[in-house]
Structures are given as structure tokens and as C-alpha cells.
Image (cartoon, rainbow, N blue to C red; front, side):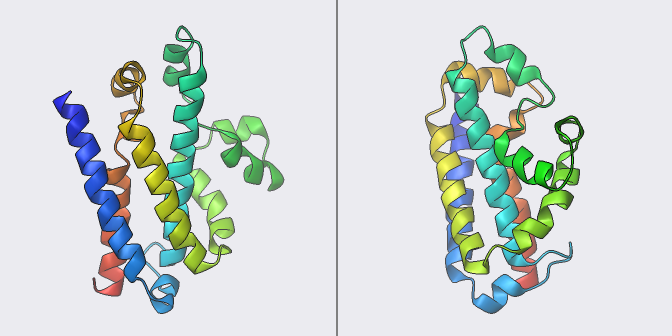
Length: 176
């Protein structure tokens, strides 16, 4: 329970940090290039995408019959949902190809799509998606949380690690 409270507190603190960052970004900041080659806005769209992916996955898992949850959590591709599939299928990839892609390959495939999101909208989307996953993790069923903690998807419970990595990159780029 203490570990759960620690991750929830860590997520809350990082969400506050993300909120302060996004609310302080100027249009020039949002258009600034990062070392990765993406802009700040593209990075924020990336965060929104992955937060929504995880939230959707958690919602799906919560609705499964209890006896199906462990096998779905254990599946390598159990986290891939329609929001991931649709743009990749439109890009000409098959579902079989998509389910074998790594997160890095998905990022590479979707980055051009994220780059077309208006910069201010990308910042707003990042905050909305982060708030949604933060709330979902605060209210997550303890049995589901325990299954995830024991799996290779424990990273899903601590989005703050992903947020902090990219907040650090953005702050370094804008001198924050």
C-alpha cells in the first residue's frame, strides 16, 4: 500500500510540474526543436497519445471478467488499442505488423501525425490526458493494480517517469 501511495504521490507531483510547464509555454517555446528532432508540441502530443493508450487499456482491463484479466495483462500486445491501430492501418501497415511494433517504432510512425496537431492544442491535450490517467490510477481497482505491478507493464502505473523524462528535455531546450 505504501508503494501505491508513493506512485500516486509521484504522479500527482509530476502532473503539477507538467501543468506548470504547459501553462508557461509560449508559442515560440511550443515550436522549438528538441534534440530528438521533434518540437516541444510534438513531444507533448506524444505524451498525450501514450497517456490515452494506457488509460484506455486500464479501462478495458477493468471491464473484463476477473478470470481473463491476468492473461490479458500478460499479453505482449495487451496494451495496443484502436487509437494506436487506426492511424497505422491508414498508413498501410497490417494489424499483424502493428502488434509486433515496439513503442519506439510506433513513435516513429506516428510522429508525423503528431507534428500536424496545432501546438497549443498539443499542450492542452497533454494536460487533459495526463489528468485522466492520474485520476484513473488514483481510483484503480487494487486487484488490477497488483496484477499490473507483477507484470512487465508496471510502467503503466507510473506515468510520472515518462512525463519527467520529457519535461526535463523540454525545460533544457527552453532554458526552464
